[in-house]
Length: 66
Image 1 (cartoon, rainbow, N blue to C red):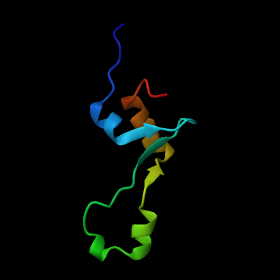
Image 2 (cartoon, rainbow, N blue to C red):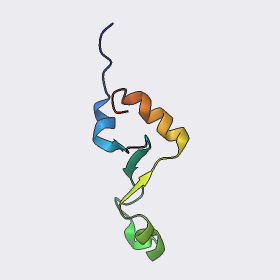
Image 3 (cartoon, rainbow, N blue to C red):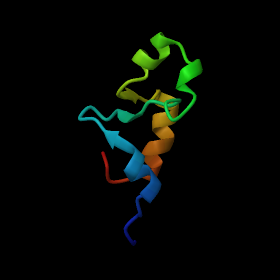
């Protein structure tokens, strides 16, 4: 059976942690910051860990990242 391919878009956007969780950039930071609250901007810094339902989908795209 041939090797499975990793989705190129997924490998650019997501990283796997050592415990198997999926890390991704925080959503909602590209534009429109002037109307966001200061609290939102602070909380949106850095990366976030995806919820289990979303992580399950991403893991299908990255078969060798586990």
